[in-house]
Image 1: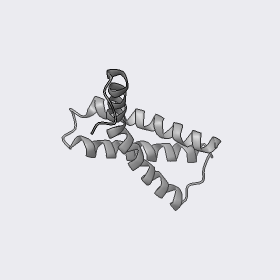
Image 2 (image 1 turned 120 degrees about the vertical axis):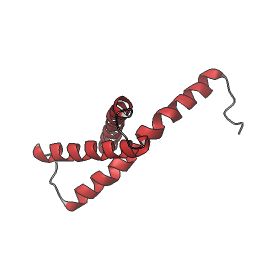
Image 3 (image 1 turned 60 degrees about the vertical axis):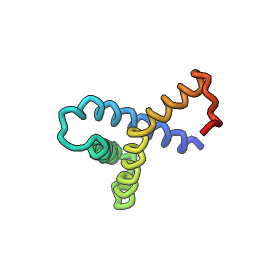
Image 4 (image 1 turned 120 degrees about the horizontal axis):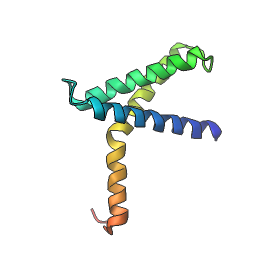
Length: 102
């Protein structure tokens, strides 16, 4: 259970960092924002993998590289859609809207 909470915390922190970087730089990059978010996410995930390897937390193997790539897509998805979903939930809960209506 401790590993799961650590993993969720790391994904949340990485998504926050990616979201901040993308929001601050999206006007200066000539590619679509979602593609930029995926690129930043892959860079952050690869950097985290290399830092963990340098500090001997993990051993760099092909499976770790694949997991880092997969996690970068999860981080990008959360960074792209997580804030909007949280904002919508907040609006529904505090705005008095009935969430059962479609």
